[in-house]
Length: 328
Image (cartoon, rainbow, N blue to C red; front, side, top):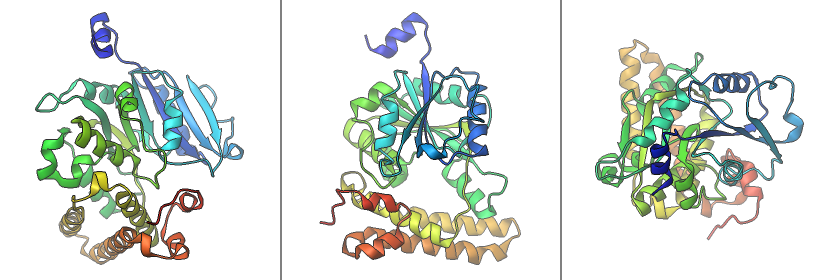
């Protein structure tokens, strides 16, 4: 009998730990911790992987049940390896990865994520991961608000290999801004890739779907408040890094086009801005979209670029300073 079946037979609900990589924690992180402590579904440990001990101030984080802090240097940080390291401190049935700027929207976040694992895909595929809906912050731009609703709609869904023809790359879409994993299945898959510029969540999801026929759950009722107002330069760099991650993992992304999804988003965002009677925002949105596309195309051919130029294009400079970057 599998562990899950044993728990159900014993009437025990799955245990949950939360793992959060942190860098220079602020008031938003304090709100995140406070909301986790108020969840109706109990959280066991909150495992914080803090980059640079000097930035961690004990005052302000006292009284949070289960808080466990582990320090690392900026040179040690990696989007995949740091999360794997945090996961090794957990023995819970479900591990939830969050970023330090994602604040639970209500007290039901953890419970709704945990409930997603009781679902199955159309062919009986078991859920290996469940990601939350992201709602825009109060200061979020109008175009970014629409992007949030485009990527995180009101309807929940289960995605499997059968959806590749319909959804394309969106089949693998998931976000460690707030994403729960079945811990046993997570380690059976080998965890996250230990070295990646970012996008570790989609790389994991792609392998789980393509290689082992797992399902990915989108839990729209599990909600966090999270958004960014990136400028053109930041958008260029973020999409450069996104393309680098896809280029380094052809086993997941090869042959699955993503540009068409971007074009669809631009068209729908422009239409939304016009409907909102803000047509003057359309040129700025198109400019930002152009920066995303140029960054993405540059990232696709990063191996032929001089390293000095790569360092100007990337958002994650520390990644390139480590050994093991393969330009072949």
